[in-house]
Length: 347
Image (cartoon, rainbow, N blue to C red; front, top):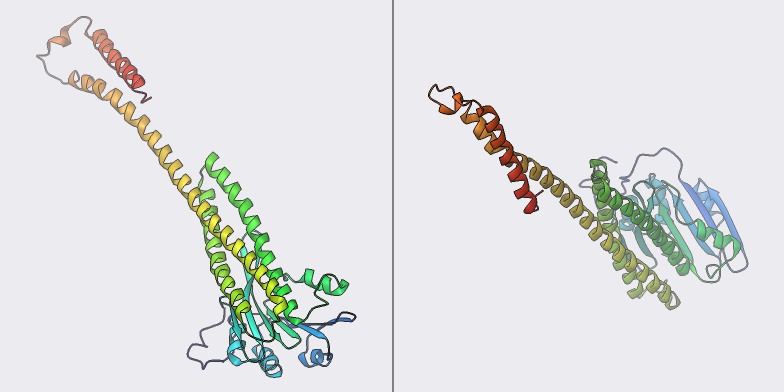
């Protein structure tokens, strides 16, 4: 992560606080209308902008946030406020939506899950006829399905405007949340079976790990609902009324994700209680066995202790069959106590 050199800096100062990178930022330009389509990759901003055509919807995807100078150049060209640019390069932003005079911006996290939840920041800036997306290039993105629709002219995306493209990108990100949560759900089922059958420490560590993952997801998903609702209520002319129905559908998807995350959090808490109860029951069983054994041998130990004293005036020591009688008494006590415990169902 970046150092703390940005502490005390004026608002709007661009400092990238993500992982250090040395590779060049890749800029993908996609332009389209209902009959035309153009796509190319650039590593130079001026070269990319020289291919921008009028009267077409433009999607500029910037993969990499580690060159604040380049982000600042884009901001100057499209008149993006410095505070927005600051939010874009600060990769620890919470999801939010902001409405400016000539553009709107939505910031969220793209989620991926293999063995753990990984995330990368995504900022979508919607201008007049243009969508600019800024993302951290970790494990690709969720936009391949949107690119294929654009290339093959499938669905509504080539027929509608830039606001629908922005919605489609956000919808693709939300779909990745569903995929990640489904994988986490499968993992929870495996851990639940492991803990019920054999509550070992590895299962406990995995359980704690998943609880942290769900807490992180919850922190990312809850603000997304507010972000989308703010988009729906926004009075900006960049988001047309025809897109409201799609945004409401997206809000429903996010609500479903929130419900699932909360359900999984409760389920993980329940599994944790099962784990603790199982361990407590096992410990109680061990203590029960030890207590029964102690209860059985305490009177026998008392007898042995009494006749182990070295006094001369002990009449029983001279008894001819004293040894066998003592053994009989001790065995009778043991058998009697075992029968008693059995009847009480303590054994």
